[in-house]
Image (cartoon, rainbow, N blue to C red):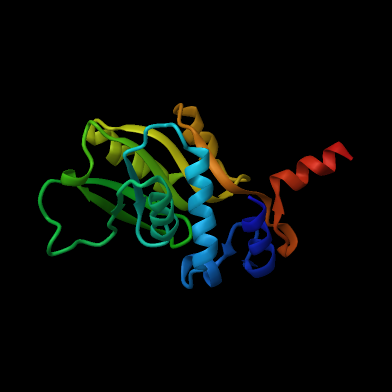
Length: 198
């Protein structure tokens, strides 16, 4: 997605060879018009798949998931990382390790909001090692629902998350695929392909 790639190049900050900071438009402050375009793109890519629910994880997955839900006209359910006083019964849980935060969280979703009749699209902000996506897949599978696909805003293709998910037979659609963060530069997969063609 060209618009997203341009935004990453312009406003993203490469902290090291593994970490890209996008706080100015995705992970802290949000760019609503960009989120709207991201939602439209996910809706277009998964059009005709009969999706009935979108499942994401708090907090950075919520904005792109809600915009996709708006364009697909389906509800969005987000997995909580923190225990809630009001969300205590019939919880489905999974453990998720965060590479960026170096911590493991137990995420949870109420059984009330996803069931065996659902066709679920999982959406998340980043895909690196695939832990968050695998945790969400685990929760959806506990309900008996079908995981129709996984939509990722930014994929770090130099890490193994996408391969792990595809090896499980899951469809992964990433809007921006980063090949490298070497030397403080963001290089996208499509730029690498263009280099080989030249």
